[in-house]
Length: 175
Ligand code: 5GP
Image 1 (cartoon, rainbow, N blue to C red):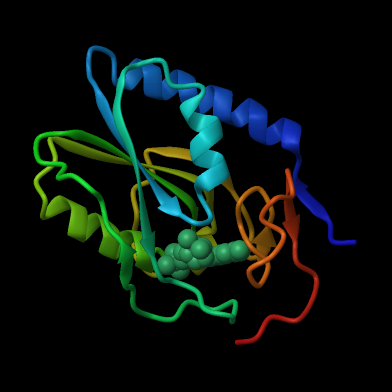
Image 2 (cartoon, rainbow, N blue to C red):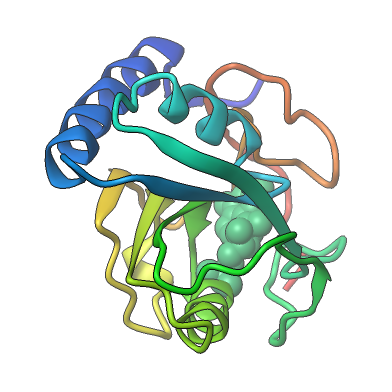
């Protein structure tokens, strides 16, 4: 069995702390929350339960990053876009993991062009050793070493998203 890197209890506790920060930072404001599919679906659902400020709407965006390999493909494609515009809105983007930073770099560029009032990023995980693009993560769950991880929404070759903790894949990684 693969090793557990972050337990269900640790995730729950950290999300509570992030919720406190978000509630403090957005006092008196209304949020548009955008979850990045598919990996961030579980984190988005749990983080939302800790957000007490009004949420005007929740949307999801689907972009490509990884195919069947565990290395980034090098470009992104939008498969599912937002239903409504975000001009003058306070946008909170929720991502599962910032690895090289490429995906979020392009997504931030795309979103900034749509002129939101503010845009902030929450990411459950961050792998600094893999960084190619400097990304400012406003609400970060955990910094991790260079492992390929899965569970809690993140996939292992399309599978295992339902596992309630974050596990380290111990098999071979195709470069
Ligand atoms: P980046 O563009 O930052 O290199 O990659 C971001 C995306 O790659 C994430 O949204 C996620 O889908 C995928 N990714 C990066 N590292 C991992 C990992 O360790 N496990 C899984 N399952 N996906 C990862």
